[in-house]
Length: 147
Image 1 (cartoon, helix red, strand yellow):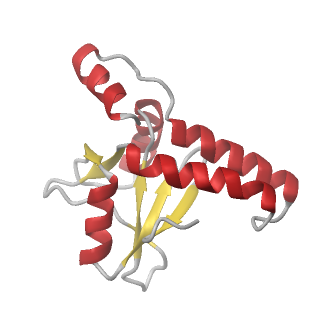
Image 2: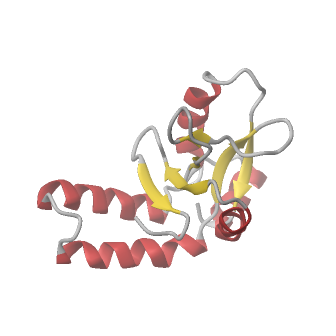
Image 3: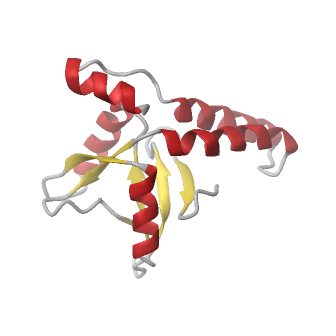
């Protein structure tokens, strides 16, 4: 979500406009389905737009009582994990309700910036990336911001 939209949401409780990144992800997903290959030249412009938009937005995630992000482990026996993040208030509302039903802890919203995500990636070797809007778009990026 654009930081300005988030400020409007905090001030006026306006369910802010859709994330520009969310729109790019949807275009990417639609093109990938049609092209059947994520290496297609046509996707490069969309990948570039996603990467250019990514540092300009903020995201919502779920944290527990100790202010730690909810971690989705990659396998049952692995310590490697991804963090679910949401591009806007609507996505957060749907996703947080579904994820919260899996946990006994009380979960709350936290705003994450790309800098926050970079810091987690630098500090925790088990962090493997994040999944954006896991219940609608389910778009994955690794710890370096690659698809």
